[in-house]
Length: 94
Image (cartoon, rainbow, N blue to C red):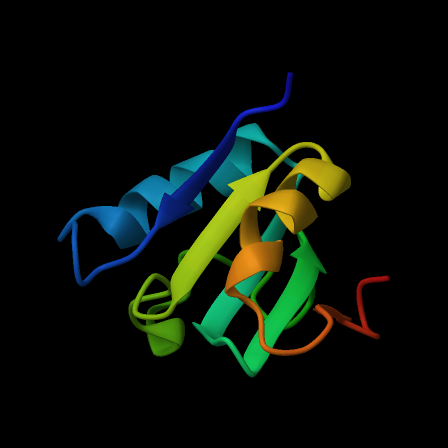
């Protein structure tokens, strides 16, 4: 069974650093940038949009919730009930 975890700065002030560490450890993983039920997008770890996780101009990467896992389907199942429309895939990293 695949573990799905989330990082969000509103509930954890260390979420940014924890998300960065998760990405560095799970380089073949997936994450959903969950802005809202209408604005969520699935990415692969290493997506060029935010591939350099420690770049200061990115700011707090967990200011929008990140739902992460190593199994794409497990991540989809986790966020599915919260979505108002089908989960979009990033066209850059997929």
